[in-house]
Length: 160
Length: 160
DNA sequence: CCTTGACATGTTATATCATAACATATCTAA
DNA sequence: TTAGATATGTTATGATATAACATGTCAAGG
Ligand SMILES: [Zn+2]
Ligand SMILES: [Zn+2]
Ligand SMILES: [Zn+2]
Ligand SMILES: [Zn+2]
Image 1 (cartoon, each protein chain N blue to C red):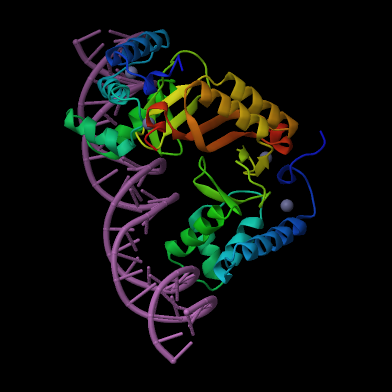
Image 2 (tube, rainbow over the protein chains, first blue to last red):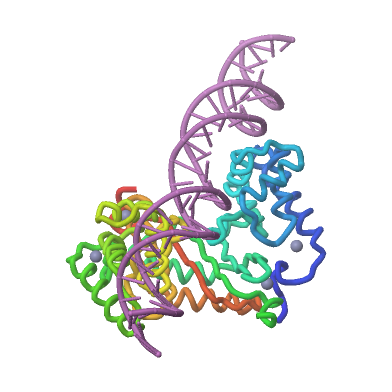
């Protein structure tokens, strides 16, 4: 089993975090939008782990870093990151995770491990195509989609 | 465009409701489980429309029908119906909808119209297969999945 | 400069969604 | 007919999310 998503594989995670911030800065500069301190910190919080964090978890960490600790502080930063494509909301978890391919237009497919809570974003083209075809047959136009699988990641498959 | 899902097409809706209850009764009898008054009423409430209702909407209707009006009343009935496969939770909406193919083992794919709120369940085999393949490539074992599309139904596509 | 308008943040309050825990009632089978 | 299992009622609280408004920051145009 090669080419595992980073979330399921040992890797130099400092790259993930560093790249995430760098790409966000670059893309936002092109769009004339600002990666303000709260937004930056929020993205760093999400990038710190390959899993999804609830808004209140994020809020708590923001508060520790010296930002306001009222819910809108977290929700606004998260909303911005989601709109700009640097984070996604995982609906099954009511939680947020950093996007692993910012800049590339993509509808994410999430694999969520129910044991270790790892969240991986996996290539979606085929799944999207199948969904679009099913929708088309029903005369339905897809604008946004959430595709999420809950199960066991490779590391937890044995331990089940 | 033929073979539209009922949710998007004019149809004799009394069949949907009647069949839904009848099938639930039959299946539950086989399983030695009971379609109690609250459960039955809850299923009727969900079957009444091809859309998803929040638990508190359901609760309000249950209260009007003479049942308790505390949240657990609705959540327990909904949980039972979901476990037994007569209803699904639509995660994007935090809401519940009656299953259109009870008895058949299936992971649903939902098409949710953002204008008229109609929710249709559409054939999922291809989409599921694509998702399973993507997961397999990542060494991930899918146990449950939610696949939901938000967009415009055939009736609302023009009106957009 | 300095004003002004857009954007961003802080804060209060409240809305919405969901479950824990325990008391009471009903059904089923020994 | 009584004991255990299942179901319902009720209180209380937890978890998630947004509305509304006050304050602060910044960058352009005068
Ligand atoms: Zn990493
Ligand atoms: Zn895992
Ligand atoms: Zn119908
Ligand atoms: Zn519609």
